[in-house]
Image (tube, rainbow, N blue to C red; front, top):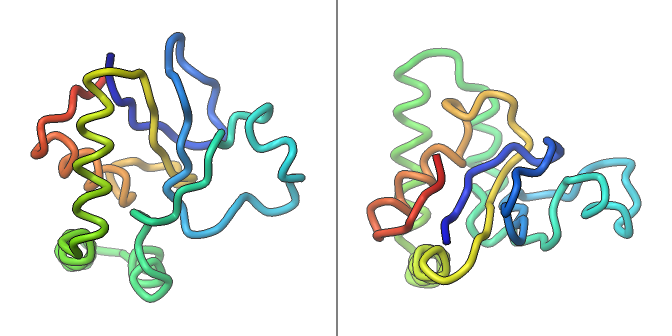
Length: 129
């Protein structure tokens, strides 16, 4: 069993499990009834997405320094007790179920999901390669 980090809207991997959308907003122009069938997500869970203010900072990243600033602020947001417990839960679930979490961003290395992946690994999650 593992947790997989994915780009929402991409083809699903074999045995991917439940796909969780860790994004602030649902996909535009897609009926809610088609989120799963179009490979967006099965469950929308914005609780570990960056806040709206931080999301704007992330979208404006141009330099490595900008990215480091964003990453530090996102990690700080995830220290909130409720969000920290959610990360613990996802990490624990990865030992008993196949699940995936994701975002829309094309470049994972400049997306909050890359940091979420690190946070999950730090909590002992079994991460798919």
